[in-house]
Amino acid sequence: MCVVADGMGGHAAGDVAAELAVNTVVDALVGRPISPETITGAIASADEAIRLRGAAMRAPMGTTLVGVALATVDGAVAPVVFHTGDSRCYRLHDGILDLVTLDHSVVQQLVDAGRLSPSDAAGHPQSSVVTRAIGIGDRFDADLAVLPAGACRVLLCTDGLSDQLPARAIGRVLAGLADPADAARRLVELTLAGPARDNVTAVVIDVIIDGSVGAGATMRDNERRVDQHVRASSTGSTVR
Picture 1 (cartoon, rainbow, N blue to C red):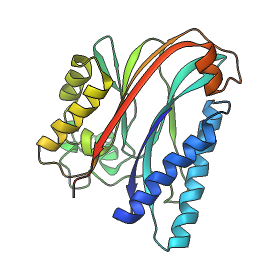
Picture 2 (cartoon, rainbow, N blue to C red; picture 1 turned 30 degrees about the vertical axis):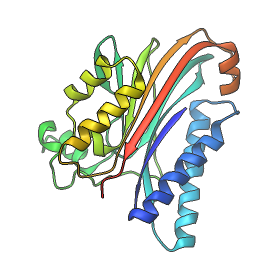
Picture 3 (cartoon, rainbow, N blue to C red; picture 1 turned 30 degrees about the horizontal axis):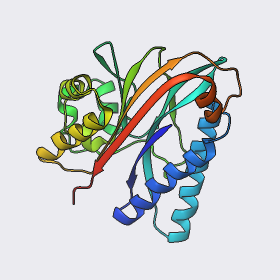
Picture 4 (spheres, one colour; picture 1 turned 120 degrees about the horizontal axis):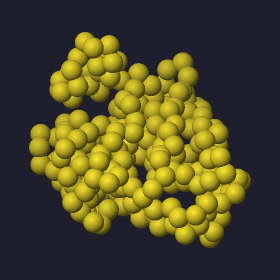
């Protein structure tokens, strides 16, 4: 699995929330049966952990979260994307770039209502205001999506990247560089070359799954029993 979190609540609190979310989700899933239900449970555990830590530190904190994990869905292994907030997942397949996630943000609500055009969304004054996050609000709410079968390249990124680079530029990098490490590095370089306004993190994953395993398989079982190749590389930079 790969997970990206973008913390909120000031620098110190945001760092704590993001790290706690990633560690909690990973610890809850590694070596255990992975399914949409267990992914949702792992995110719920992260939500609770962040709320408890925030109460102890007397510093309200939260984080966005986006990730992808190989899970058992209807008896077969499939990549499942999960997210809350405005960190994004893109999928490149056969040269076509699709946005898998839908931002949980005020700006996205304005776009959905027809009050704002997609081209004006990135520069909107409320572009960083999220409507869902882990650790804040009345309750957490995450969206899950099962990716279609077939080899693909997946990008997980924070809004510091997606707000800066248009989809066409992202697609060109993902399609033009064979090594995911090079693609991740190039995306961050392009973001920082502009008037970067936010932290930026990119994780690029090549996913090829050939075969299937039975229900209840763990990630370790998948590694042994499925002829699969998953390469991941991530890079990030903080803008002060």
